Length: 138
Image 1: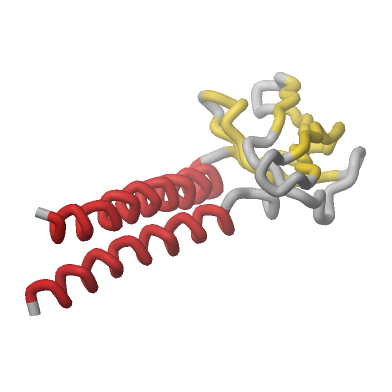
Image 2 (image 1 turned 90 degrees about the vertical axis):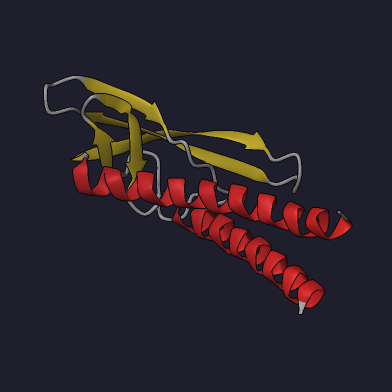
């Protein structure tokens, strides 16, 4: 029983992390491939203090016109501890879902790195499970 628990927990965590990572990667890829590309402007940044690292986090707010002429002003779903190349008043490329323009990503400021970290952690969980089973039943 303890062996299955020892193997099951890393597998469960690995599967959860892999699922999150794959969904983030697929969502970003779907917006890039099927979404509408638009030129936007960074109109500001929301800032907050990250509780874990006690560092300042920046969330860009972007404004652009949709294909049907609506002005969208949307807060990114991604926050970082640096603004990178983004500047208030500066141009950005956004990809958005035409059926729900609030679903968007800023080109170059998306969650690809985070998604890959989740996939990597998930892979570690799966490999840990395989190792536990291998050494237990070999």
